[in-house]
Amino acid sequence: MAEENREPDIKVTDRRRFSADGEPLDSADDAPAPAAERASERPPERPPLPPATFEFLVISLRWQAEMQLGMYGTEAEGDPPRDLEGARHSIDLLGMLQEKTKGNLRLEEQRLLENTLTEMRFRYVQAVEAAAKR
Image 1 (cartoon, rainbow, N blue to C red):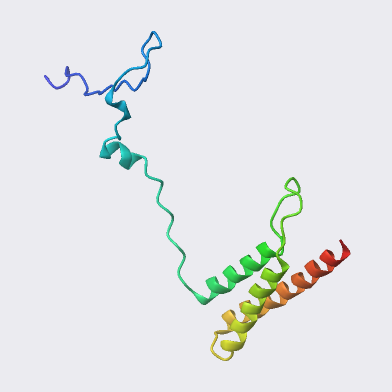
Image 2: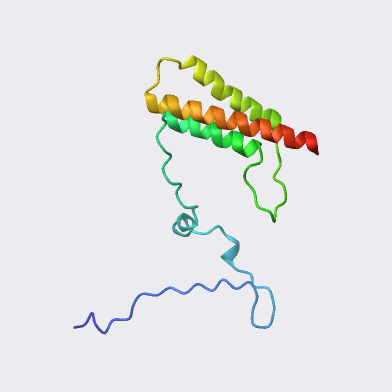
């Protein structure tokens, strides 16, 4: 019963740097925050990274090429920046990956790589033609 009447433990810390009259206060508030307070200010933890798979590698290179081709953006932002030389390099990396892994891929991996290369090469040609018209 005695615990029911007990006041909760509350700590109030005055962090104001000026008094009610507007005079600066000389206090220890300029000292670094205690470790417990700094711990609560840590940035949130990152989500776990996806597993390192062949599919993830192909999709990462594809996404990189798409970014370089300026495929991501909104009308409000205007035309996204394009890096045709970088896009060609990313697509060439996919082509090299196809050559070096020939005969060593599962059917799904092979199809993913072939389809990605076909589409990226087509989009690259479109981007070069669009750049030539400007």
